[in-house]
Length: 308
Image (cartoon, rainbow, N blue to C red; front, side):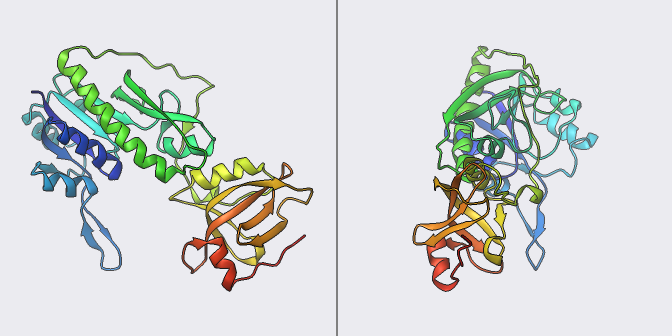
């Protein structure tokens, strides 16, 4: 049985690690980010990977930097055959990439070479992609540029937001990582070099500047924006004099009104005219200082004046 070292930090990585454990792989150590202070008391909070690894009695390492020679020596002493990386959160130096006997592989949540970068799941939804997936790639010094070992694809539902897709791709990533380890163990793993051209998009980090809904845009684009910015930073709008975060919305019927016109506000939601002659119906929102709720519930206490 190969000796495997795992490197990851958030919930996405936990799903991958859990699958490897359930499939019986020998996880000799888990590397994750250091505990970080949170909330008002600034109490140190362990990463999700650390919490899970400790329940399985997997030794946990939390180096501040993977470039420290003492950290590299510690990892070499573990004598890993394979290192599996899933959302670790830091670039890894070449000295670390050279340590495992067989390979160091990364679980990336897109079908490479599309969406190299920090937010591949969100950009797949923002762009309205009907299909995405996970790629197991051999790690290279350049971000997400390593050769491809295998790819698993999955359809994206028109109603699925980035948070929901995140959970599904995490599970698919665990399945793919376990399959990749089996291929490496049998000596059957292949390599497919990536090519990256102008037809492929880089998945840049999200920002709050992406949040405001521009009603001059097509309704479907705005619906994708709402879905793609879940759970952060969320789409926002100032319709009816109040700033809302928008959590759920869908394309409604046609209209001849100017973009931004509030067409209706009732049990079906709040319909707003968009730039392509269609409407966007907001069905779930959160007003500043308020709670996330169905638009119909919000309207009971906060009537919205129609602007048409």
